[in-house]
Image (tube, rainbow, N blue to C red; front, top):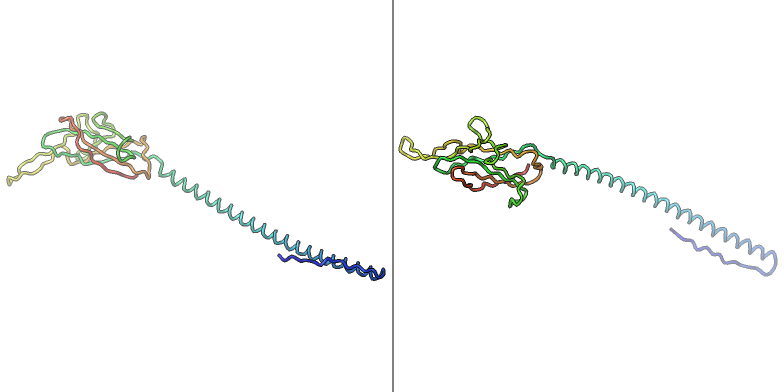
Length: 217
């Protein structure tokens, strides 16, 4: 914005009323001109300020729109994050029933699930020998509830017609065992879980080795 520097110096005449009056009139004219110039520049400055304020208002409006869009995006993200967190219905955990021993035995199963890889505080800790609910095995036609005495599972070595020994499955060894993790446990979608299953030998009263796995719902 340009700034005028008006010349406001007064010229006084002392050689008569006529010349003195003319000098005063000339000075007033100069003052009027300077004031007019200053007023014009003030008007221009005010117009520039109004334009700047309008630009600021537009920028603030744009910021408000962006904030609203960000809030909306965060709301949608919260919805997406909430959806994976909804509980899932009963989740099947399946293994193949082992039978690596050579004597008749009945097996139960022990299942653990945890968010920690070291199973320090299992979310699921279920044994079919203490309660058979949600423990199933495949009997060749359908999945049936684990019996109180465990499921028969072992292998024997028998000779084939050429005199060669072959491993023969007895009972339900090699078929599937399933544990349904109840919905009430509250496993969440999008969460990594660690699981492990081991057998319990009823006749020997001892556990087998853990079989580990992990999964994401």
